[in-house]
Image 1 (cartoon, rainbow, N blue to C red):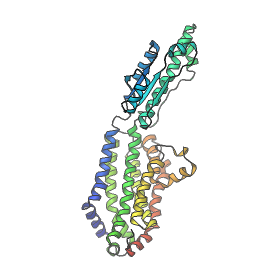
Image 2: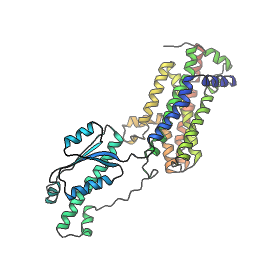
Image 3: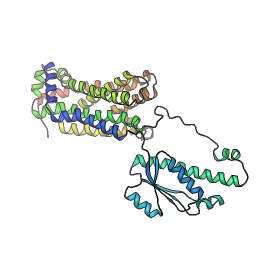
Length: 383
């Protein structure tokens, strides 16, 4: 096993693919994602306003919208067509149109419409601007109602319970800053790491078959598949643990992201994810017994994990079959542990099911060791 371990270290150190794929790719990805989400939440997103009414009320409304942190009124266009062309040229991401006689119609009870368009081809910016524009629409309705009621002789104290019967006191739990980096990077980075592990685990065995070294590898391990698998994968495990520790230093100690239950629960989470992904790679190679096919399926599973994990679209809202299928992806259990241990800080005992689910991938892979031994012994590379 020691010989196989040393040999694998040499293969990693002398392979450009391994150096770029295992070391450079995850580090460059981390730097890019951290830089891209450095501000936490996108702010000052440019929009255009077409104010065809241009009264004191609508000008005050525009100033209120411009005061929002996420919105920057970059243009005050003279017509909707002009604003539409600005959106087509991607100079702005939303257009707010205030119709002519808006204030007059609102006070007289004719129910005028505030019309706004958002560019949802850019999902995050479009969604954030939709939030602000919807809020300003509600404020506009309340402002008009307040003016109308005051004109009828009511006091502000009499009007407000009607305009806003329920006041909202919101306290976002876990991520009170609504920082996109806290929520996304803590799952995207492990997801990319899982993808790399799956592919390089399959490659670790498939490349031996392709090179015709299957029987030689078994001979080095005294015909013991346990020694072969442990010797082959242990160098990668050590490297992946080092990358995971680097991620944790940057995320939790340099950027001060929430880590309510401390270092060990999240380190154990990363360790279990690494072992689960390696187990998943062994399972894939054992099931398909074809290097190219297993590598393709590994990349597919790694990419689908980002969608089915539930951090961008809740699994509760998915079809029942997809919701159940999500439990067969290691990243899903990593995500649930992260939410409970890093963000919510609940006792670690509540996450034991997820830890056990990750380790189950390792145990399940043992049943495919015999298949891999036969594949190595046959030493037949299939195109």
